[in-house]
Length: 240
Ligand SMILES: [Zn+2]
Image 1: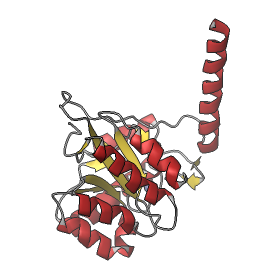
Image 2 (image 1 turned 135 degrees about the vertical axis):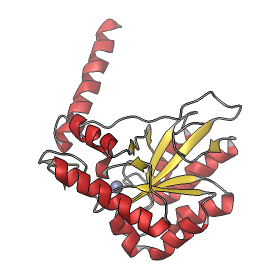
Image 3 (image 1 turned 90 degrees about the vertical axis):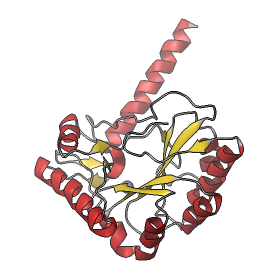
């Protein structure tokens, strides 16, 4: 019994090592869950990353027609190419909160290297440019300053986290990777999201209309809704 427990822990550690080896060691991804006293209904926050590319209207249309709230982390790059989707987000401030995913979708990591294959910002100055460029673009587009920042890949160093906090932004962590970086299939995505627990901050992608994961996001979110879950935006402090 003890022996198998040890084996399980080692296997888990190796798994972790594999993940970090792919993205380089020493990076961290802060976990975020909703704070505050539990409500009668289980509550989650759905966060949608709009990294680059297009808009998955399957997701946005389903959220609008079901009155489900979400927080969108958008880049300047995405906003430039998705004016219509941005207009839709701006037209429903009751449902959608727009937050900062950076200027050019460069990982906010202040040392040279790669995170999930993407070249990091590589210096503190480049991290600040990524944060402030994204924030300015959102303020120009919406008239509102974002309060949250989530870097591309959601990986950081301890020092880049300090830089982010110094700009006044809160770090947009998460507790569930709902679509596995938009790589999961429809059924796997739906199943994963449908297992969310009270307080989870769910991260999915809204920029891959060509992939099956987006259909699974819709299914999973509607399954939670049927189970009586509430959906909240992150607001200023990610509380229930
Ligand atoms: Zn992204």
